[in-house]
Length: 261
Image 1 (cartoon, rainbow, N blue to C red):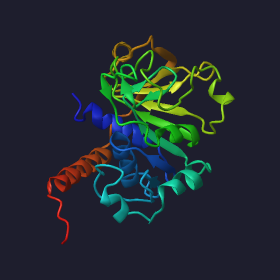
Image 2: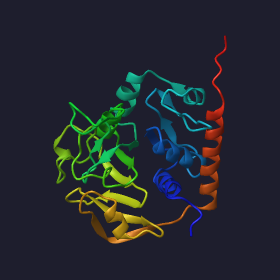
Image 3: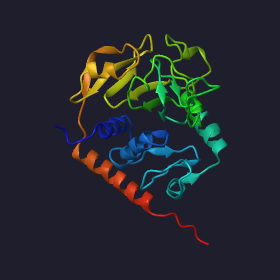
Image 4: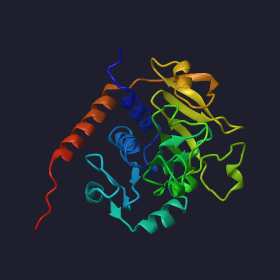
C-alpha cells in the first residue's frame, strides 16, 4: 500500500514537468497546486502568471479564483488583463500554459463550455476564460484532468480550446503559434502525443497502475507506447510540502473575510 493518494501523485507528476525560471500561465485548481508545489520545491524562480494580471506571484495558500487577493498581495507586479495577453502570451513569452477542462479528446482538444448540445446543454460549464488563447499561444501546454470515460471522450460536446485539432499536422496549418499539448497528466499516468498522428498515447503509469486500468478510464481505444515508463512515487519532501500547502489553504479559507470599514 502506498502512503500517497492518486490526487497527490497527479499533482507531483505535473509539478515535476516544470523547471526553474519557467514562465507559466496558471489555471485555478489542480494546475495551481502543481505549479505552486514546483515553486516550493525544485523551481523557486518559476514565474507564475494568473489571468487577473498578477505576474510573479508567490501565494502562501492556493487561490480560490484568479481574483483572490492572495495573488495580488504576493505578486511582483499586477498589470491590466489585456497586457497579459498582448505583451506576454501573444508575444510568445509564456513557456507553459497549464490548463484543466471538463472534457478532453484523443487529440488534446478541450471543452470547458457545455456538456450536451450548446443550445440546450445538460450542464453549463464556466467557459473559456483565457484558455482558448493560452492553448493557441503558449509555447506548450500541459493539461491536468481526472480520467473517466466521461472526461476523456471520443468526441467533445464543444471545442473550447484547440489541441491538435484532427491531428496529423492540422494544427501546424493554422495561425496558432504554440506547440500544443505536450503532456496530459491524469490520475493513472501521463499521455503524450504520438509524433506523426498527434494522437495522445499512454507513455507513463503511476506505480501500482496497469495499462488495462488506463484503457478502462478512457473513452476511446487508447494507444499504448512501445515503452511505458513508471512515474517515481512522491518523495517525502514533495508530499510534506504539498500537504502543508493544502493544510494552510484549508485554514485560510475557514477564516471569515473581514472588510475594513
